Structure formats: C-alpha cells, structure tokens
Image (tube, rainbow, N blue to C red; front, side, top):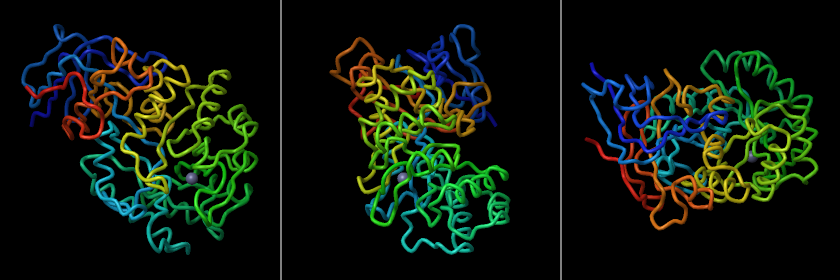
Length: 387
Ligand SMILES: [Zn+2]
C-alpha cells in the first residue's frame, strides 16, 4: 500500500519551533501519515505519490492544537445545543483538541465509580470516533473528594491520561488537590487547573496560592475563564511556575497580554500555550485559536511566526504529543493557509501581525486531506489544489 503524500510549491514552512520558526523548503513528503522529509523539491523524490497537493505558494504549518476544550460526545455539545462545532473548528485550522473535562455532560456522575466510568467511556468514544478526522484527547475526570491512589491507577490502566480542571469538583484545597495530582502523575496522567474566578454558578475561585500548591502540569486559563485573578497573582504565577501557562480565548484579553508580556520579560515564552475553553457560556469559537494568534501577535507585539508556535509546537511539547511540529516521524497534521484577501501587509505573517486572520485553504490529518477551503475564515488569496 502506498500512502505517500507530497505537498509541493509551498511558499513558507512554519515549524512550530520557537527556536527556529521558519524552515527552508518548498516541498514536504509524508509516508503512512508521518512526516518523512522536507526541503527543496528539486532534491526530493516526489514520484509515486498517492496524493499530491500543489500548495500554490501558500504557507504550511503544523495543525493547530486547542489545549482546553470541554467536549461531551461526538460532534455535539449540549452546552449550547450545537452540532458540528468540531468540524467548524477544523475549518479554523485546528487538528487536535485536548479535553479539560467533559463537564457539560447532562447528569455528569460525581460519585467515584460513576466519574471513572464516564472518563473511560469518553476516552474510548473519541478514540473510536474522530469527528471530521480531528484528534480529540478526552476522558479527563474532574477530581472529587474521596478518590484514593487506586482510582488513579485504575483510570490510567484503562487508558485515561488526563485530569480535568482541578477545582470544578469538590476538591477545593491545595493540599488534597496536590495529593491527587501527584497520584495521577505517578500513573502518567497530565493535569490542569481552573485558575481564576468562578466560571458559572456552582464553580469557585482558584487563587495563585492554590495553583502553586496544587502543581498541575498546566496552569489552566491563567487569564481566567472568564474572570482573571488580580495582576499581581498572574505575575506571581508566571514567576514561580515551570508548568505550561495556558492563555484561553474565553478569558480576559488584558490578562492574556499581561501574561504574555510577563513571560517575555522572564524568558518563558516557551511555556505559553493556547486554548479556547469552549464550548462554554460564551459559545463555541471555531476560529478561537487563530484569533488568539492574531491578537497576541498584534497587541502583544510578537512576530506572527512565533505566535503560531504558541498554538502548535509549544502545546505539543508540553502535552507530549506527536503532532504540532515539523519533525521526522511526527504526524502529518497540517494547516495550509494564506494571507486573507484585501488585508494589509506584504505577506501572511505581516497581515497576522497587523491583527488579521489568515485564510485557511486545507487541513490534513495523518496524511489525509480533511477539509478544503474553509467556510469560516476570510477567503485566502491563494488556495492549494490536489494535482
Ligand atoms: Zn475553567
């Protein structure tokens, strides 16, 4: 079986790597869904491809990753009674989603055997069914009082590798939360926390002290979801955390810029990752990750090629995923995009740094073309074509 994919006439390759964000080359080859090589087409073997894409000069980047979503089942969210929100998100260039808890499940079980069962089921149904091809890492139980080490061992052995946002359940103190996060970590489970004020009636405040005491792998929505902590606490978290500093679309935009500027001063931009925190009270945001890249690049004065790294490579590294970077053997997950029509700036990067969204022309996941011209972004100047 030949599952060779050739993408030629690429205008620019964004790597996802902050230390080297733009790679040389106009051609990329994937084999059996994995990146094999890239460079100048003249020196590459582009024969015998099953699929050849003529990029028509547009930019190729690793598919974007949303580090913070709240899925429930399939491509439906009961939170806003919305269908096909994941497909819409794919049209925003996002190829991987990471659950911060399936908290919008109506009647969500909070007893321990029930929450474990739901986490295992959620992990399975998204492993077995990828909406429109999008990779959804789900099965992220919210910790509740009464859980013991054996529960985390059971969950991990059953395939659950994430913990949902600490603080959304009955565990409200840092000491208990840290004990459970450490149990999870012992069995290979990543953790995140609800930083900031309550999101909806029934949730609570998590301040900087609790975040520091709990020591999750991700400081979930450091800019609030929705309500941000006071500035001094956000600065304190940036100074004291080695965890990922996650900025979300559903948070406070001023606090997002404070986080970015503080992280830059501290030399910690490699810790910045992005999420939407949708579906939520503010709806779903199919272009949320793109909008954050443009917002942070323009208002935060970060080169667009660096801001894109917040949305793919940084998250991939922090989340230990085999996507989000142009790297041999990594998943062939890409977004092909171009400067949107009638935007100022000489090229895609300049237009994004001026605050404009790019136009998405194609997405590819595991070497398979999953969408063509986006129905959601502004139209791109040029569109890739299958040869
Ligand atoms: Zn939250």
